[in-house]
Image (cartoon, rainbow, N blue to C red; front, side):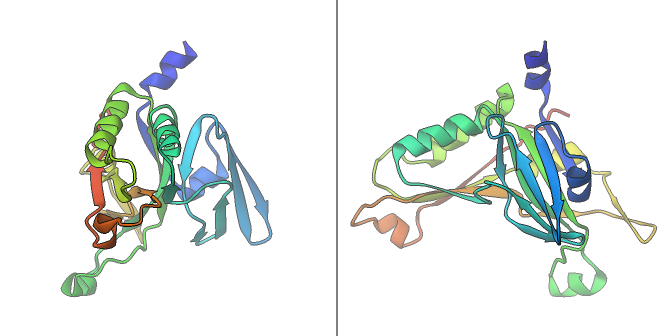
Length: 212
């Protein structure tokens, strides 16, 4: 029964402060002078979150490799693929707003806070999208370096919906989501890795299923 409940979970979006103040199952938060240490169950989760300076102090997710994950062997690639399709993935996104001044200069200000996005990699639809994306973007030729961005912006926007707003000074503000990806970097020791040298090895795929 418990396994079936977990398999039905697709994703969630939690404001960083709420996540730290009331950690979800498998997470604990320990407050120290000037920072909060977040520990997590590595058997059930993949956390790709860098150290972050929030409005209430520094937040550190212990043992997280950060947004960029580097692998150097095909064995490490296989292990990462297994983790991405069997665990819940956590990344940190920024909620930004456009003011009238910034609209003129086409600049976005990350002033609406940070949100943790949780995506169930073992859900059948997410797993299918992840495996398909990896198959299409990661070269099967050993010795080629590459960089792959896994973008969850479509799933995030679909999950929160078009009517989602953040209250700022008693006004509703529609956020623009930034940093909605994590990156897989494969670094080979090939002597003549020309595609990587010339910037032709950058790839991307999107996770769009959100279950709503």
